[in-house]
Image (cartoon, rainbow, N blue to C red):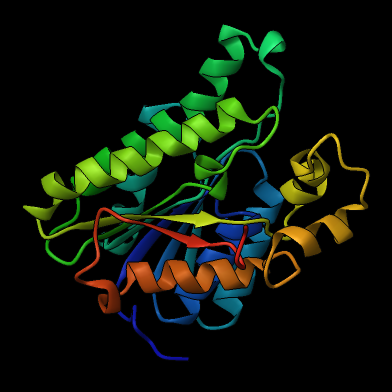
Length: 255
């Protein structure tokens, strides 16, 4: 595999599992030193570090809850202290939410937006302090931001806000030579999808989930997390040096 990230350092929030773990693995395989941010799954984070370092990479695990901007700042600062610099932020910490309008509470709103939106905004703020020309920031949106799905309003809105942040921050960060983009994954084979996948199906349809996927996705399957990570690696690389302020859908042709 090409070493596009040789000599570079990346922070991956939500890096202990799912897409985040796949992103950390891909960046490390291409030569990056990787700090894996995790909230509570210490064992999974340590196991990933052991695997990456066992393959000859450089990696550390650092606990941080992105709901607390101070913890995110500590994560970034400790990464720079350990590896001497920061070149890439890949933001993949997030939470799901489904609920009909009549059940939504202010607490639901605060919980979802605190992690999915505010958490990513302040991750950018802290990372940008340490980046210069060539810095790459990749946030996480979702195909849900641009598609109507029953009972998914809070989650979708939190991700749509991320796309607006990326667009607007691109002008500001461009002055520092930093690009910022977002990835909008479709259905991906993660533990989160296993838990919530059925909720994406229209409540009026009684199709089994696998058959429903074949009617909604051109490639007729969920993505492997490594396939999403490939697109993230592109946005984080010099190959995407003239791409900023954009959200890249990686959804298998979700229609």
